[in-house]
Amino acid sequence: MKKIIFLLLSFTFCYNLSAQEVNIIPQPVSMKTSLSTEKFIIDKNTEIISNDSLSNSALFLQNYIQKYYDLKIQINPNSTAKKNTIKLEIVTRLLKSSNEYELISNYEQVVIYANSENGLFYGVQTLIQLLPQVKAEQLIIPSVSITDYPRFDYRGMHLDVSRHFFDVEFVKQYIDYLALHKMNYFHWHLTDDHGWRIEIKKYPKLTEIGAWRNGSIIGLWPGKGNENIKYQVLPTAINITPKDAVIKTDGIKHGGFYTQEQIKDVINYAAKRYITIIPEIEMPAHSMAVLAAYPELGTEPNKKYTVAETWGMMNKYNNVLQASDTTFKFLENVLAEVMELFPSPYIHIGGDEASKVWWKQSAVSQQIMKANNLKTESELQSYFIRRIEKFVNSKGKTIIGWNEILQGGLAPNAVVMSWQGEKGGIEAAKQYHKAIMTPENKMYFNHAQFVKEDSLTAGKPSLLADVYNYEPIPAELDAEQAKYIWGGQGCLWTEYVTNPAKVQYQLFPRLDALSEILWSPKEKKNYADFQKRLKTQFKRYDLIGIEYSKKYLEN
Image (cartoon, rainbow, N blue to C red; front, side):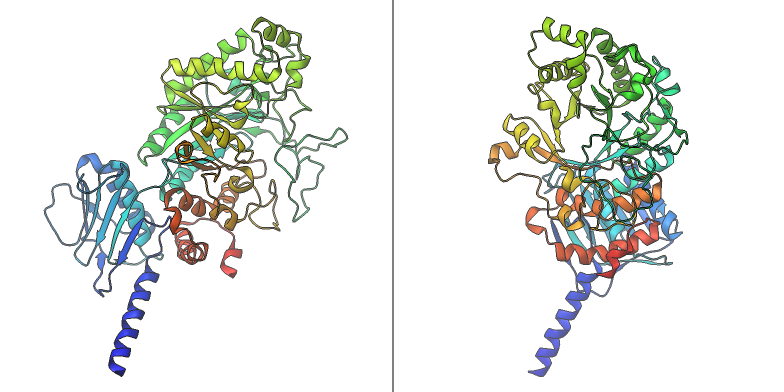
């Protein structure tokens, strides 16, 4: 009897030990671990077997192992070896989802099957999470059998490079972060009041003038010089600058932009990681950088506009384009160059926070409304978006806009990105339009990640647990409407994010939580288990060199 109990206890211990070794984020659909003590070992003689069409995945794995473990393994497309190999293969057998993969590892071989190159790449990301978290001459891989595929088709992350500019090298690094978490869309916020970041050959003043500002506010909005105050966060992201606010700026010129060749380079880099880049060109508001360069496009053409140096200025500063034929011709020319550069079928055109007061005060705007039988400024907003959509559609592309594009009537083919809570996404889904859920209170990673922060952050805290427990499909949608929730996205605005280390700090580990709610089955969500798996992930971040808050290690 004692022997039986001992054997049972030994079995339980081995099973738990094995389970603890495998900590994958996002959680796979199905995973079985083996009790075998024999495990696959990657060493200098290991080969990756892959044909040329799969070289993206093979090269990514080869480069990752060389970069972080100082171990160079060879890619051999013609190898027939069945031992000490990592085999990458596209098959259709038993695989249903276009992004599905199977990963099987034993002491002889690791095999990743998929029915698409995307799926194979996702399998490689899982294999990377089976690698040890420290450098070693031999890399031990546990014996597992995994079947996996994503829950949502749209798994996105955003980066604002207008408020603070980040160079090409870091943007590529950011894309790698997304790839490691199986994200497939990068929303690149390229234009705003604070800087125009993309070269447009037809309009050189956009980068000559619009890409530079003469200073940035000091400290927390509204910029009263309170930069040394700790534990202070903003009450909301939609701020109206008080009339009596004393705006202080640092007087340091800030800016930069990407040439079209650099844009192409980044697009190519992302494509090799199966990430689609969606460019955002803001309109009709958030356009002060445009107006600084081309003031004739504004509702006050004789005004001297400047690139914005402060945030939260919806009503205080006129940043709205005039809905004139001149403006539309300008935007069509800009978008034509953008769409020529980006292969993405989607173009984000903003559409948010357009204060109607400027159109209300403009005689030309009122004439435009009268000529087009528009009764309200909200209808003028809809007219603006619909006209842009018609042009974008003529080029074979689809627009995405923030939820304000619902005002005055939704454009016929538009995708809605819901940031002011879930209401916009719900409304879009009920109208049978695709919706992307990115509610500010959960999905804005520029917000504080703790109740008390010792650095500048925007908005009320967006706690890790709140991110993880978010459900992208609202309960009030029926089964048919729920199909139009395309997925979700995290947003990282950079008012108070001025360098790569701060980007990392704000991003991790909330990106881990986001990836799991968008990839893993809903029924598998378990925050306590997620926290346990994070401990392994943090060790991996130490290896990679990613900054994150050490507060998470205290729990």
